[in-house]
Image (cartoon, rainbow, N blue to C red; front, top):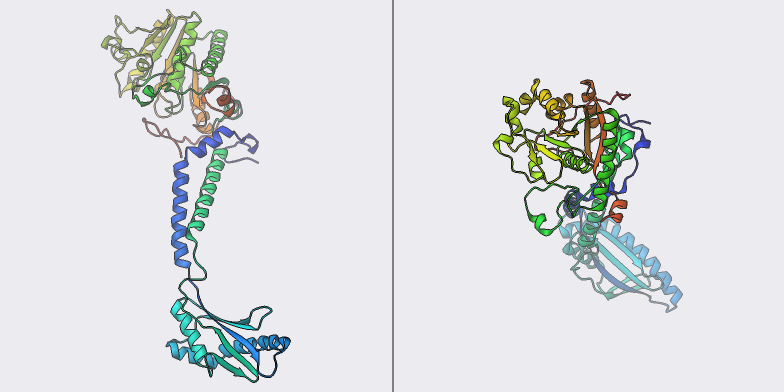
Length: 479
């Protein structure tokens, strides 16, 4: 059986961490939903609730001619049946309606004998205390005596006089009921978000890359906490997660070592030198991946050039703590094609240089079009071993495609449980349609309970805007 996206149900495997994560990040929706259920229940319970008040009278049934207990008990049962018929008779109902000034009596009148005794109990239950008491009085007033009544040789002696009930005999326990509603509603919503997480066709683990995408698996990069100290946590200064940071976690660094080894092996095998790094959407960590990939390659004694190809929102100068000058601006160079421009910015990593800038260019796509970009990369290629290009997301800008056309291959960085697999395949197919080589996909910011033990609700949008659902189905075969 297949679902609407063409994935078989066998491909839907439970990933405990992402399942629980998706539930927890929607805590506010679960809380608001549970509160809404409580408020709705409160209104409905108060609307539907009808209080019931019972007024009671108790008689002792005795026989005038005998004191035998068996005879008295038998007489009590017979009297109770007779008493019930009398109060339900049309004559008694007419008398009560006239007394209360109503068209009909809306009350439950019951006469019965307490088990094993000669006590006759008369109970009148109505929606108000006064109504219950008035009906009881009406019944008693229409017998020959309130405390003494005789039917043949049966004698009724009043044991307990009726009183006005002050509290309903069916109290509404709102506190307990609403607590149960809150818990059940919260549990139901948590299950709903868990089901949506299970059915969400995203990349939840590394195996999903080959199972759901038309691309090579280039590995997985472990999640790393960005703020190592309280000072960094409350600081608004942007800081990159670099593998040469002494505080970087072992799992984070080791995952980059494995990933960069795969990239270097593939590039050497295919004799590639220029690699474009991109993603489908923003906030997937592509700039950090590009920076750490460049550092990894440089630490292996390769001469590496990292180009910040995101002319609209450059970030590499922030990640490396650089201070670009006007003559370092890549955007200005590509607009004017200055031959004597000093674009290179040195980093603290030996053999790693950065070209980019800090200015934002709204016309970045126009700047990159034409043959200037290709000529620039050819000149850079002559003096370095590898060129890594950090580009904008592919979903809303064509800049990554332009860089990709002038590169040897393109690497996609996709964040765990973030983008629909169908949308990633759509972008992969779009690049292949332009005869651009796809190196593969690396899964970023991967978290799992195993990694945590060993180491430490909607769509998404970006500051570029929603990247959109292109609605195309992935191709059946890889190019």
